[in-house]
Length: 397
Ligand SMILES: *Cc1c(COP(=O)(O)O)cnc(C)c1O
Image 1 (cartoon, rainbow, N blue to C red):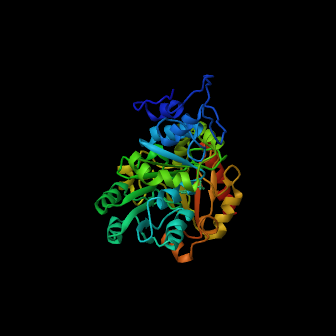
Image 2 (image 1 turned 120 degrees about the horizontal axis):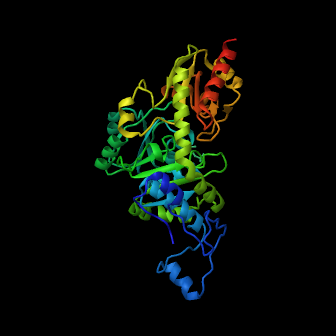
Image 3 (image 1 turned 135 degrees about the horizontal axis):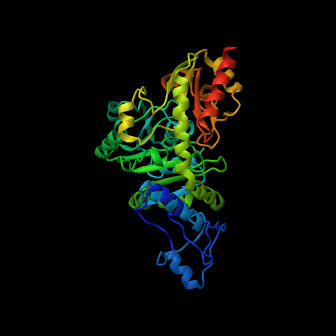
């Protein structure tokens, strides 16, 4: 029997939602590490393939542990259906490409995770799918970019690494009017702090590698939408192109999301405290944090997000040298381009995550040589602040 109750609140849903127990009645969800499934009779196999009976056929299509993870994510997101993928990029590329053909047109925000930008800017056009990148902060840019063949709008909010936001409800309205689908990459917000489907988006994608795992172990992704959209666009694409998540990783993610609310609460609290501390330091030119009143788009944030973020972006005076010196002097905060981990991680986008962008494209996104991105972990905030205080002193010494 599957446990699912749509009236439970997220913290309860994330511990109990979607659980299917085997005949052993195990407390912790089981890992079904199997490729295939056995049928009692030839007739049973035939009926399963015809879709006349429920059940699994092959792990590339779906399997019990993955199914629990997908159901739990659906309950959290308020989505009708989902597919778990091997990585966040498998989720993004499948969600975009499954609904497009040569001659179609995508409008995407230019501030995107690097690989996402490659998919829409480089890969899609090589298949004859046109793409227009816009400064997504201003709604008129989306409107101006619409063409008769526009089929997909794509954005992330807050963006990586400069934590700009896009008015999701306003873009969703434009997409509806244009007969296009809005796909939102909700990784930076997490499913707890922002609900794109409630704001009118049609499809939500995650890199589960980030907050959903939350402890730096395995890659994963998930695509969530209406049952109709998944049946029409994703079902066959997913089965036949094979981005399926390993059941072992699905199990790790399933157990990871039990503690998602605790971790995101602590990470956001830490991020907010560190942001406030950094904003007071004269070695820092500017701090961007969605939970602060001085965020340039605080009005949109108040409308669509339930909290700040687990990430902080800031700019060191003294450019690359100062940014590198700060990172090198930190003891608790580790230098890593990953995010959403229990451990606090810091990265210098211009030389790592965004090194492939031309300098003018980086400048457009507000990434300078002094820009640094912090992903707050679940450590004690006082230790993090002391780490930054010590490191900043070392930079000026
Ligand atoms: C990490 C990330 C991805 C890609 O996810 P992988 O699991 O690394 O494939 C996509 N979008 C955003 C915003 C991310 O942070």
